[in-house]
Image (cartoon, rainbow, N blue to C red; front, side, top):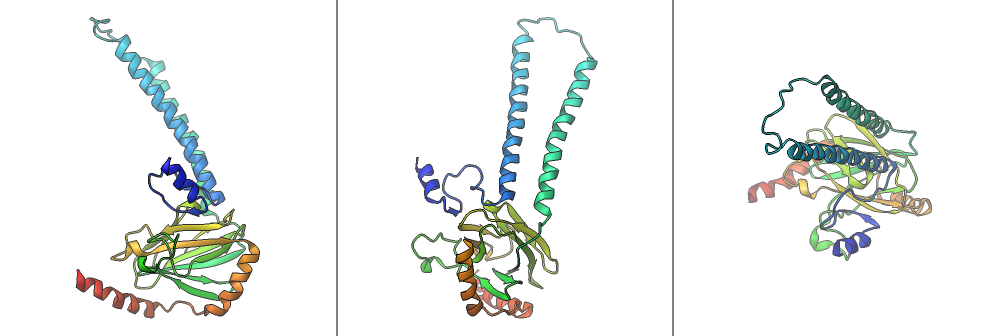
Amino acid sequence: MAGLMASATLAGAAQPYDWELGFQPSATPVHDRMTAFHHELLIIITLITVFVLGLLLYVMVRFHHSRNPKPTQITHNAVVEITWTVVPVIILLAIFFPSIGLMYYMDRVPKADMTIKATGNQWFWNYAYADQKIAFDSNIVDAKDLKAGQPRLLTVDNPLVVPVGATVRVQVTGVAGGVIHSWFIPSFGVQEYAVPGRLNETWFRVEKPGTYYGECNQICGINHSRMPIEVQALSKPDFDKWLTGAKTKFASNPPDDNAIVAAAAAASRPHAAGN
């Protein structure tokens, strides 16, 4: 009951909650398809499991030594051997084609309404809106600075803000001289590696307003747990208002790789000394 109440409370904020089972609520078409495929696959696995269990129970009862003190001397059965070869192939094909279609749908970026570049640093994200000429860093908010209702280890000072219904292309990379990170938002069905010197690409389209959380799930160093992702999906009028303020608040300076590496090294020295 407590879990159901927690789920209802967090319906507008896609984040983990205690005793959660299954996926987070879907916020994008990609996650919708992933969830549907997952459920279909579970049905197939359940049917196979029930069938095999039934065969085992049948064999245990029908061919128990008390009923068959003298075993049958059968060594080959062409029908059975062909069946248990062909049927698994058919099952695998039934899984293969939908999974390939899903992977293609996830990987192929449709015509985008806006493009955002996410750069993984040690240990924060930098977001650059290529079309709007703005860029900013997104750092975790310490527990002592959290406001009521803000989740610990997930809240950031400058969240990524996108309009509802817009197709967003996300170009993901890592800062030069850094390490590999991962841009991962469970409710979006999106995970893309941020590799230094490589530009990877993914996309999403948020279907309803809300706040959605993710984090770097690639072990990237001492502050790996302090590299969350917060995305706010706003209605088009609200996004336009935010964009007007953001163009004033944030300079359109792209991240300076050398400066970021130096700052990250300086920030990590106290931790290293403490350890």
